Length: 194
Image (cartoon, rainbow, N blue to C red):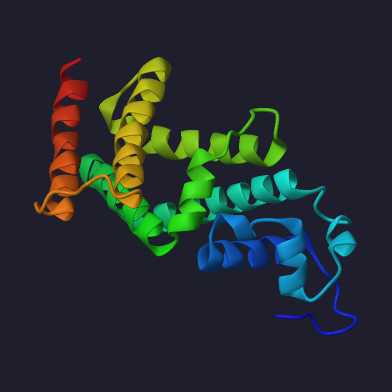
């Protein structure tokens, strides 16, 4: 999709093109040269906005994180019951991963650093989001972190196993996921009892 002459190129344009290529062609397309061809420009033009392939991948992962967070937040916006909200988060994450499997994979396998300003911002937002969801359980700060880790490890682990085709038996994968999510009721009981 060549750009019209004279139209200013932004980092958002580059990242959006990279994500479209990623979903269409896979991770090998996630490079400055391929994105430049997609935009109909010379690769050096991209270096005014993106330092190289590693920076492009990081920018895509950060945008993937932003899109995932926005999607999940919208899904739980009007849900007040805490266990239902957590189950909705689980369904929303899987739904997003099914809709954007390659973006989800890049986002969840990219090693972020706390000193990266955008990631730090999204991490803070995520902690606030989950802290709000877990508030009814009256957890201390450490327990919130442990609970978030347990939830996300379960959810992301299942999604990643599904994406790479590890579930080969005929039983319904949807039912397995539902059963896993229903264990959140057990988590709810554990949190109240502890």
